[in-house]
Length: 435
Image (cartoon, rainbow, N blue to C red; front, side, top):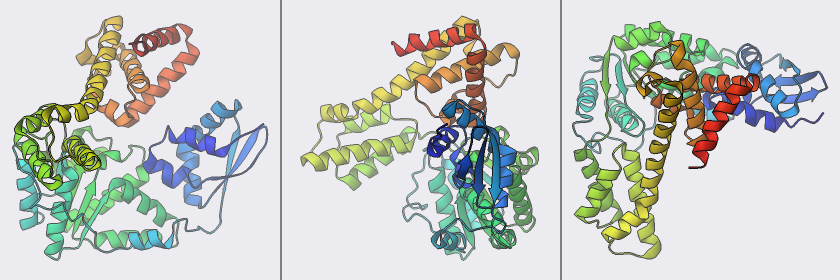
């Protein structure tokens, strides 16, 4: 039997988020295998035990899919933990002060109705750390959460506060790394307990099954909170939708929760004007209005448009853009966004019509049995046809990417077991792929 371990890793990576795949699955190596068993090696007992508890099933499924055989898995580990991370990364973990992006400051923050409340809360925290504790900032991708978090961190650092800024995935990586070395966990705790301000970005990426990480973060949170150290957290959803333990959600809710909404017309206009000046684009009022009207969801899409126009100007040595040329250059961006939205709406409409259900029920959080199958089928079709990632699909259905992963697996399993169900799903798929 032939088995390419890289193929297995690639298959497993489709099922496990990168923040868990990188520290736990990537370090595994294959020692040998036969017709009945595969022998893997982990760089530490911590990784070995965690893989056996959480991820062994995913590895077995991947091997079976690639080789056609379901093998028993045995994992060995070094008696003494080996540091798998370079000295460069180790030194980065031990940094006492965070380094912030030079452009992410309050001076460069564009203010409008969509983010005014969040900016006010942020400035209050800088003036009087601990006044809103924790400060929980949420909003969709690209609305400026990271910019505001770093602006807070930079301003507090200038007041000689000991600030630590990192994403939750970085927190997880550091935690796992320190579990592998002697006295590492004590050093990890001592370091994080020394900060007077902790800023955590993208807390929604913490998996509900990451019990050890949640426990460690819970204990750290309590330590800092009890000493009135400022805690700031960001996510792409409100607290009650986080896939976390109830006790963590409860503590987050005890502070101040504020939303940054998609940029309003004032912010969009200011951003376009500023970037146009930075790139010397000389856009007309008509072109500025065109960009405003067609890219409303987030600031990154607007920045992407202006970057594209800037590259075009440099390539072709243009002094001025005509309104027609701006539309021509950006047309593909508008079409792509429009087609994705229209396509997933059509899929939802068609599936709901087939199962005689309302779209609002399918995309709700209701667990009624009659909504489950059409919801899962819709998620599967949108994933396969629209090429959206699991997080984006989760937003359509008001849930998280973990739930989407589970739904996709259930559809795939049911298609193997039930020929009639398979026929229905493939019928939907053929219909939309022909459009």
